[in-house]
Length: 134
Image 1 (cartoon, rainbow, N blue to C red):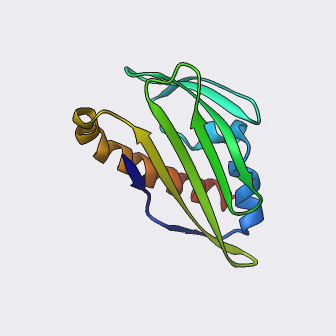
Image 2: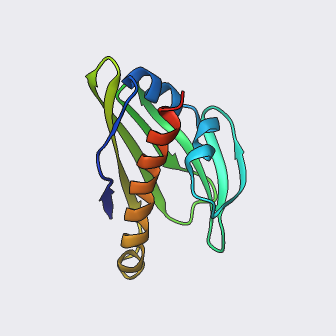
Image 3: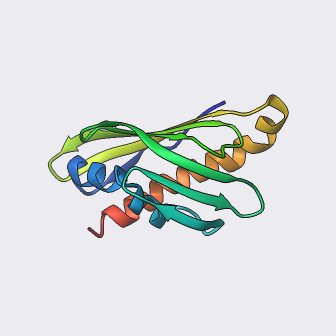
């Protein structure tokens, strides 16, 4: 199942946004409050979704100033790749969106699609809010 977030314009350069999202230590600041037991390094993070699963994300690709890819690794309940794309607009503005590719069984996917869409859209808005204060 693939989910694409809304595209969001951020009033900061693509370099600043890339630097922020390419460090997993920052990722915890933009996740929803249902996230518990957060641990991170620059390249990976582990957390629990309250009442659900433990997830470990590792940055598997960094294309400077344009793309960061996170993949679920150990303890994963299902295959998951979250890719954030950053598009240069001008020196102080960029556009960001994400693609969430989850290997979820069809019956669960029907129930998970709307919450995952909402999560993806909210994640981009939260990244915007945080980056615009940097």
